[in-house]
Image (cartoon, rainbow, N blue to C red):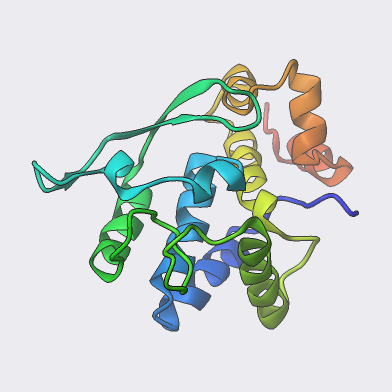
Length: 190
């Protein structure tokens, strides 16, 4: 099985999200946006319920989502940025289920990891996007752009991913020679 890659080109990331938005597929649009903005594993993302992110009493979205990671068992508090809340706000009126990413069947369960992978794969193929893309690409995309922006400390990225070291994070994000070359070539000191 090939390793998935982050979506390095932001125009491709926007094309992927817009692909679903233009079709009125708000669930899939929200899957891409929330998957990228939260850097959650797909298994954790698919298990989110509306009650965890929407406060019905106050009629507003919560600032954070609190989850227990399936893989690590660790409790994680994740801030929902404006892009994530905007996607959720767009999708919320169309969803009549407990789960955010619900299937289209009568049992109203979350979509499966396989179905989420097919959603991403089919759209990537239709759009002709580069790389080996899948659900995990969304998680990796957040870290890749956090790293390349220079605005997020490597320590923070490693902590968000629960990696044992930054070396693990670099391998995970697929830091390539092209990225290293770009850093050298774009640095202006004189």
